[in-house]
Amino acid sequence: MNRIILLLLFFFVELSLYSQTATIEEVWADYNVVVDGQLGMKVHAKVSVHGAKGQTFHMAIIHYFEYSDGHPLWGNTPYYYCTGGENPQVAAWCGWDITPEYEHTTYNDWWRFVPYKAFHLNPGSYKLRLWTYVKNDTNNQFIQQETKVLYFDYREGPHNEQSPVYSNPTPVQNDMPCVGCGGTKKCSVCNGKGYTTSASTRLLYHQCGACDGTGICQVCRFR
Image 1 (cartoon, rainbow, N blue to C red):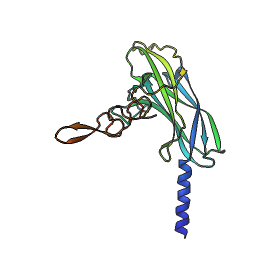
Image 2: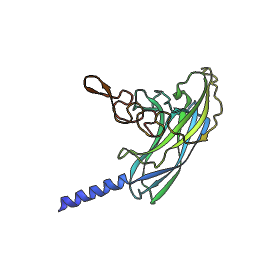
Image 3: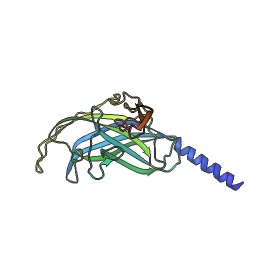
Image 4: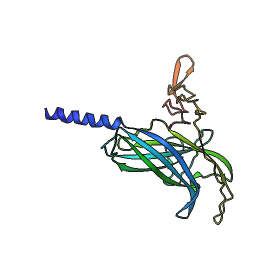
């Protein structure tokens, strides 16, 4: 009987962890900020957590950086990238252990500084964007109901340690469908199957090389 009770308690604890959701209320940025001698941007997020009253878990807010057309911005600066595809993508995250006091608890300003050097861009002008997600690191689940995107213009000047040149980016919040899948989330090469076929004397199946057999669009794989 005691074993059954313990199993039921474990079940309800797991169920409560997976019933948590989050709403990303707002995402904004302060540009051309200097922190520890590095020029960059502070990315802020206001997030509300639902269904987690009294539960302690580690919540992380993650920002993934892309070009405005949806192609990932590659970079490998320590602490400012993530893996998951063929190359590391520029990303930043912050997180703490939290215990929400209410059924709907709002955290007004979680911010993370991102140095411009993490972008690894050649001199020129670029249109970039960042996608924001909320993750329960305790059970490794993304819990945001919808992601948020922040667009901004960026200019990389000549590499000069004394006076780097950056423009004042202009942020615009907007949601656009992925250019790779049109919003279906499926790999456009294998149509979400994870494999392709070739006709010969028999039907041959091959793992899709575009998505590594996952069937998931690799352009918007984190959304």
